[in-house]
Length: 223
Image (cartoon, rainbow, N blue to C red):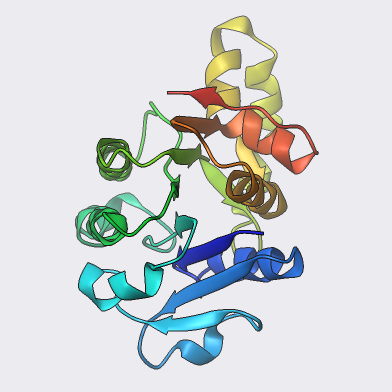
């Protein structure tokens, strides 16, 4: 069983991932801001710290096998361009700094599918973060969803017929699959798979592979 440290542990994906990992017998240390420790999933060890300050949680990482970084701006939109750099990218930079020399053998990061015609600043920030993770030299798994469907995130269901149409034509089939929608359970299954099957170098899990993880399949590519 793995010893896992999760940043963003009280968030949309983090809280669910914590519960699933605990249910599967793993040990989880969950980073939470001061005053938010009560939101940590039962069974986890709450670690009080600031995701934007590596020094605030570096010591708590000692002994962990894997760090899963899930910090990011909620409900991304073009209006939040500055926050993508001050929160998403900055927190990833601090996470990489925190694991340096810690003994962590695997870094799991949630990036974003690209290229895409919209959300340029968001994609740029996430791609920079991916590069930081790779440059650290720590084996890593990068998941690249486009949009994760779940509670409070359901409006794109209306786009599903459009995706069906785009997948029917060879000229748009690849991009419609790469920028396809995934569900929260599929994303959770892919994250669990990443924790339980650590990369030897850098594995990239794109949308089609996230879906396969959710249905019991397992595929990824080495970047």
